[in-house]
Amino acid sequence: MGSNLIDALFVFMLAAFIGFEVIRHVSPLLHTPLMSLTNALDAIAVVGAIVLVGERKSTFATILGVIAIIAATSNVVGGFIITDRMLRMFKTSRPAKAQGTKS
Amino acid sequence: MNAEFAGSQYVIEVIYLIASALFILSLKWMSSPATARHGILAGEIGMVLAIGGTLLRHGIVDWKWIIIALVIGSGIGVPLGMVQMTAVPQRTALSHAFGALCVTLVGTAEFYLRSPDVPKFMMSVLSMEVILGGLTFTGSLMAAGKLQEVLPQRPITYKGQNLVNFLLFAGAVGSAVYLVLHPGAKELFPVIVGISLVIGVLLVIPIGGADMPTVISLLNSYAGLSAAAMGFVLNSKLLIIAGALDGSSGFILSVIMSKAMNRSFTNVLFGAFGQVQTSAAAGQEAKPVRSATPEEAAAILAAANKVVVVPGYGMAVAQAQHKVRELYDLLTKKGVDVRFAIHPVAGRMPGHMNVLLAEADIPYDRLVEMDEINGDFPQTDVALIIGANDVTNPAARTDQSSPIFGMPILDVDKAHTVMVIKRGMSPGFAGIDNPLYYLDRTLMLFGDAKQFVGGIVKELGVH
Image (cartoon, rainbow over all chains, first blue to last red; front, side, top):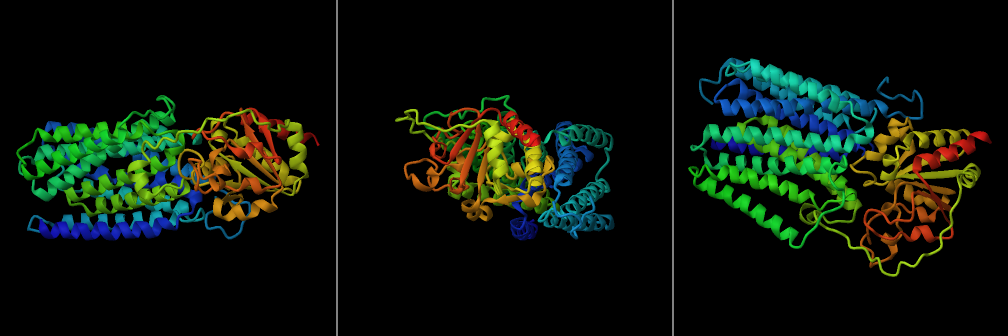
């Protein structure tokens, strides 16, 4: 338990630093899609809910877990769809200027 | 770890490891529009791997409800992903609420499964999980309601608001501490969750529209942190990483937004909530303004070399972005250099204006950030302001008594001619008079943004 806790704290600390460094470089142009993407990724909490429901420990836990899966899955699906829709709209006026994406 | 840590569990942990790496790459690729769509793909693969890996766990015996819930959730998610671009702020707030709901429910279930033998550390993070999750859930619902205009948008304030919030928060934390020390006091858990839900409502009640970008960012951060806390409870490194990434993303956005509104970070954490600016309404004698018709505005724009358009929330409300695009096309065809100046807090969430203009097919290299474009205003012939107010108010630079004094603004008053499309002379959200409107070089274009821009477009098309 104790060493697990310390491991977890290290992971949290490192991930937070990576998050800062990576996200600091996101162009303000993309702040809205960034937020919808992090939202979709954050919905990874669904794995906790899946385990809760799957292990069928109590009816109460199953009911809460099912609602939790629904809420998180809607974030995953909706978040990815809208982020993709937004990013498809961003076009540059300099045509075919070695832009990585095709669309 | 013990013998139960079977081979298949190593496989699952490796899958989680790959998913974590994909999540980080996903955010890294968001740094530029050219690679951003790879970022989505990476995120999607990571998500599918993580969910698939979880389903492999040998502890899972009940598939039926998982599948049903996944299907229903996807069914709700599709329409939520297909909303109009103008509705993105409320959709985002709603998804923060859903994320927080998931975290709070799982935390609650975990508590009752483990209680009363909850170790002290576990109980601490569990409390953090449900406090953050609970207040984010109701707070985000309130924000979504205000943005969707089903709730009154006016800030609702009362005396001692901050004190009440503080006492409630202290109550929640105090109950949590007691529960950590006395794990048997089960009945305190619903109290903690209940208080958190109430705090969420009270926190967002005093927020008006212009503060929404900061609040949404902050709620984003809380949602992430609550998920990370859940990761500690479940000992899931994947969740800790995803939560930390989301938490730091929201945190960075909050800092950017608070800087753009000239608020200190502590002010955002505690005081931005409920900071209602009282306007100095006294001495409002009707000062003369100059106004112009669409025909006159069209003639001035057509004669210009450099035009900077400043969009604000008013453009979104009037759904004028497509007309603005027509204006952009016509002027560009006439050889006018048209750019768009984007203030960080224009609109209702970070980056709101960029998305709307991109939706209208305006190339993103024409959208320029405040710091980059401010030096160009003295060489700009026309600054055309569409539905923006406080972010252009020169009082922020000069008038120490102004509530927005010190807030970085777009220096539109330095352009040769300033044109402001506005419905009437009513002050902006903050209730502050804008001296820009009384300058000699300013022309007020009174009317609905969409109709007025349409009028200019029609006029330009004729000639």
